[in-house]
Length: 168
Image 1 (tube, rainbow, N blue to C red):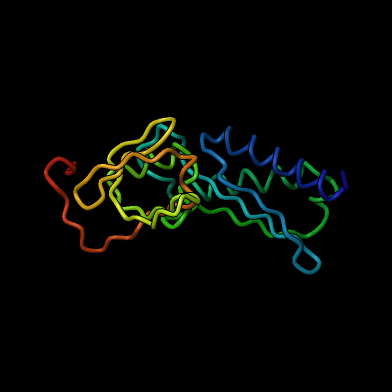
Image 2 (cartoon, rainbow, N blue to C red; image 1 turned 135 degrees about the horizontal axis):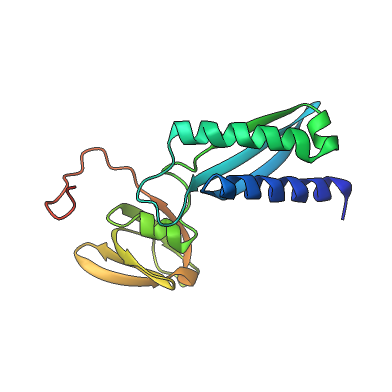
């Protein structure tokens, strides 16, 4: 294992620990060279049981905690210039984990099935569990196993009418 890989692994482990201590989940960590410095990009989100996504104030608090730890954690890394970018995955993130699907309940999604020749579908997430998702596609419920999905993303809806059952 190269020292660069070891350093990235240590940074990822440190970032994950700090984010979890703050009460959130790490979606992704990347460390890329950018001239004389490195860019550390961290995607964070609320925990699986949270009803809403992470706020800007929460991201700022996580960013401050991460900056302190990265400065102290790795003498080699903290001694060199770096840019820390902390953000949330956003609406266009791929739905790759069962928790992503649970949060997408009621949302419109675009799904590309994996390799069986079926065309991409757009439908509303009815429910999901540990093995798959139930979509409402053109008024018909379709069950898809997670391992049968190549890609899936939430579709942005600007003028969606909320039904009485969905209203808060």
